[in-house]
Image (cartoon, rainbow, N blue to C red; front, side, top):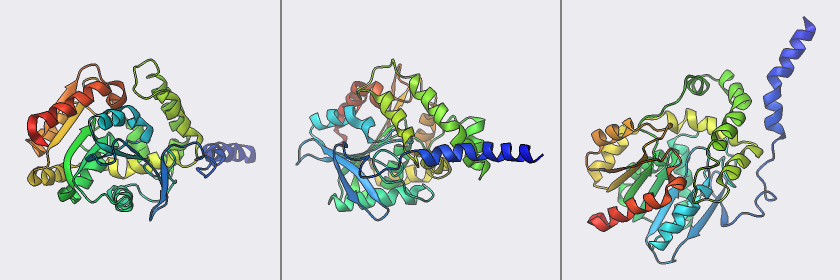
Length: 308
């Protein structure tokens, strides 16, 4: 019986030990990073500006597991269109600090508000959100409608997901869910990203970059915290506020997205009937980097059609 208890204890501690042995995000880890760093009220944030210094500002907010490098192709395209583009790493991802706390709307809005204040960006921004970043961008636009000129949502969360039963169990179950996340997520993330290795991408080596996130301590707990935080929210009232404020909205979806279902289009139509929506054939959830030219074309069309 004693040996069985010892084996159970070792089994229970195994994923915790793996997490503890992962590398910390530190000054040494940040040596080769492009862009800049700033210490905000919650911790260090990695950010980068692209494009002309005097262009209209576009702020890009990335999603759950892929940090700011996801924007490398799209941000260059926006810069060519004349935008001054700000990209940054959400806490728990990329080169930003691994910050404790529930990653809900308050958590993410604090980081974005802090960063914009530090960079002296006061308003009139085009806000671009991808996946979970779409939910963050939506909450910012509803909280600060006077500061947002356009809202562009790419495969946006906040309107429905296709989370499986195990993901729902992990998100809703303390302790056991934490253990399961640490035990299973790395393998799942590696498998999911590896399945996209042969897809076209505007971000060089994106699969390797995505998988590299698993080397750092705090990434997996941050993902879980977001699942329990902002990704548990439905953004219906936020979109109604944005609609009433008259902010032009462009939502772009992948026809073959298995993460955010196309039924989200119907929800957005109900909440914000003037939102412009585009579906890109052949695109999955990685639409931001697999179909970058099509996304840029939709953005260009929106601006050309007089909503600027």
